[in-house]
Image (tube, one colour):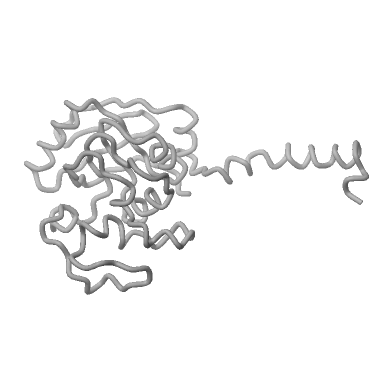
Length: 212
């Protein structure tokens, strides 16, 4: 997992509440557990006019011109602005995998489904919670100004708008540590390698018969 460094990212506004994980990555793509390659199928049923299938080349698929992520002004966005209860529905890690693979490192919304929220931190995506009024204002500013970008500083826990306004956000210390250091569950475990080896050596002495 890549460490989260200060990011200046173009914002894409997804003005829908209760976006569920099946919309983020439809169920037919859940067969793979590679954690990569899901970006072309993120929001598949909304982005394209045909039905996507695993292994399909998305290059020449017909796109939905009305879907916000297909608009030219939002190409290359790395910050997703969303509404309340983002990531609801089934508890699939494929959802943050798809968002991260698409290019999103940050999501901003008033609220999230709990499991999706936790999975984001484990997979390199920063989900920021802001008051609904602040999110409303960010939607207005994003839609009013092409190229609207936010600077996200996780260490300082701040967002900075193009106009220089600094918006603070809260984040759990342990989750912040994960993202800043690029640590998933395996990475956290590997930090304890010396203690694990010491325990194994002690057990070999205490219960040698287990290792025969």
